[in-house]
Length: 315
View (cartoon, rainbow, N blue to C red):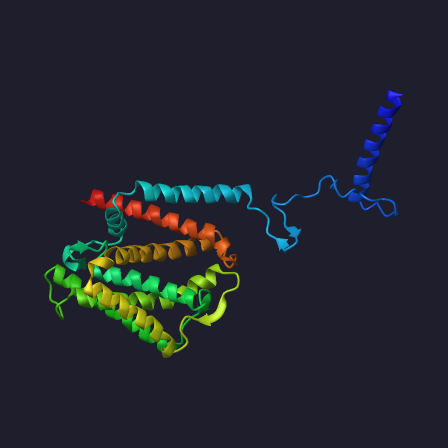
């Protein structure tokens, strides 16, 4: 009796497996061929294994692949090591990053109640101006704007950049005790630096957007002089803050200037990486930008370390 019961159990088990196999091959078409709801088909894809899943909310993206997770972990680790092992405290860390791209000449540096900015006055204006333009673009919904500004605006912005370059050469002439056309000052450096940082961002960010995004928008960062007013207001706020130099804003302005420097290097490195790996116009979401953007930022960190080491050996 017990042997017959065991045989029946094995038969039922075999029938259950056969039913599942038939359901997978589309052979169940009879009225009585029903798979029990508590028994999913063998080999059915489970959520999160690299294939899209159709759930209650619709088609969902699969979990990141192992390769993606390894790359992301490596980039985050490299960035964390840079932050942890670059010199402390925060002021020294900011100056170390700034030293890679700036001579940090004391007479050319803005001081907040005796505390020097991590980069000189011209660079403080340039990189804070770049960051200001990027922030306004995001706030106004033009973060993917890929059209260049109209010719009249472009010419005006190029004149602003030219003014900064001429002031730089005039300042360099004074440093080397050569003839100068006017007396250089930190006020002029801040004004020309901030306005040129704003201008350079407006002129070049559309190129970044047209290279990186899958669907760049047919928008310009500024369509006319009216649109330029908002950026000019932001530039004026930066100029006044740097020239007044209240001690309360020392760390915010120092962090913003170095953040602008890192954003600039990240944008440049990301463009180089996208073109080098032939990944133009592949990114469609902010999430998809994480790995290319982190790659550009980590590359910037390595560039900063290399330049700092080179400067140490130069001295």
